Amino acid sequence: MNDLAVNLEGVCKKYPHFTLDNVSLQLPTGGIMGFIGANGAGKSTTIRILMGLVYQDRGTVTVLGHVMPAQQAAAKRDIGFVSEDMRLFKTATLAWHMEFIRSIYPGWDEAHAQVLVKRFDLNPAQKIKGLSHGQRVKATLLLALARRPRLLVLDEPTTGLDPVARREVLGALMEVLTDDRRTILFSSHNTLDVEQISDRITFIDRGRIIDSGDKEAYLDRWRRIRLDVPAGVVLPSLPGAVGGVGRGGASGGGEGGRVAVITTGQFDSSMTAAYQRAGAVVHAIESMTLEEIFVANVMSRREGPAL
Amino acid sequence: MNTPINTPISTSINTPINTPFNTHMIKRLVVKDWYLQRGAIVPYLGWGALALTLLALGGEYWFFAGSILLLTLLIAKGIHLAMATVIEERTGQTLSFVMSLPISPMEYTIAKVLANMLLFLTAWMALSIGTIAVIAGREAVPDGLIPFTAVILVDIFVGYCLILGVALVTESQAWTIWSIVVTNLLFQAVLYYVSHIPTVAIEMKGAEVVWSRPVLLVLLAEAAAIVLTLAITFYLRSRKTDFL
Image (cartoon, rainbow over all chains, first blue to last red; front, side):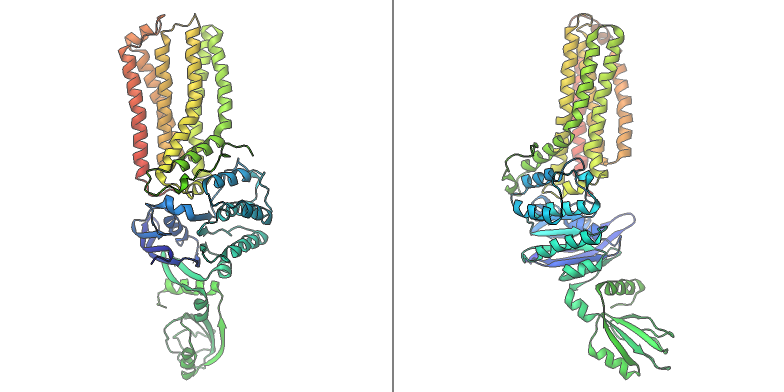
């Protein structure tokens, strides 16, 4: 599949206390993938593997047509990488860093760099050690964006930013999205940021990809159904119902109470019909935020039942 | 902005991927380390000038003080460089920035070794030439001391290569500190051993520079140790699978 910017197949990496287990991930060229997981879920390890910074024990990784890690130098010519734990040289100025990157990447766009300097309210003459965390992240992002990479890999870039800095960073990323040749992989545990800019979603938990797909389809198929359940009524166990919280003890597949809340990742109208046939009254069908979907997905996987 | 990196952009970054090494990127990284560490050379050269002045003053006491200061400076410079260019890059989290650039881990290692050699040898050469010039120029100091001095100076370079190698392979502050301890013990051992070789002990007090067989053998062993240390460093780095 030549139109895949990123393709991971069966990737494994074993550490003493963590294992990345059989990770497969496909990101088409021009796609914007939100890579969501809790802290320690394996997001950074996956990203480091696809950047060639950590070698996988098993599996294949292809980035922009280059086999990783063997061809990482060639692949990284077209990748802009920013991670939350990335630091610049504190004794050098931002201007020095800009010049350093310009000397490496022929595609460096100085005009765009100057626009970003103004937008991010940065002072090129300032040494990195004098920058706040937010300014440092914006400086790092500037260095990645101004080289006009084909693939932008962002590992928790908005972590620790104040609301204004976060807005500025997301704004810059939104602008990048207008170029549909640009591919972005955006990892975060902040689902709100991911929801704003991504068109594809991948969830990772405990070193395993637990779900991946189109964001809109995701949001469409996940619903929270509130039911009034008369005493004695047994709710049917339906595929995709990943749990329920009930006052009076009702739950997905459970029995009796006053109110049941069913969360499903495979919602369609036949589901509510089935509950109604069982004697329950559908009180409300609610859309879910990405965060709610993520938490429901993770918790259901950890507790066992398949989606 | 007049920095060393402000040079014309090379297009060699677009060389085919089957080119053995990206020399453009290696050069950029060497220049980067030179730029970031160049200021740290100046104090060593300044103190080195003071050490050479002490050597040149005359009198056994000043000569001894100058020698100790000189050796201390060279050893400290090596430790400083390995810590600042390798360990600090990891602990300061600038390694992920560098490794995100279009380089392979092996190119990074080559650049790091070259930059360190350039930075260390700049100070080492200047102070070594100065030391030998002072010995040759002073009547009171026998010229026969020059081969022994060369052995000591090269031994410091061997120790520096060992510290750099350990830093590059382990990227660990603790391991690097232990390598400093071991290197200094080895340095003292070599100093003791060579100075107690009978021919060397006699010739170092003579007026003539004599490159005796034992001295040449020690220098050869030191050269071999440098090559071996760097070869092992490259080999072990080539087997690494985690670079962050």
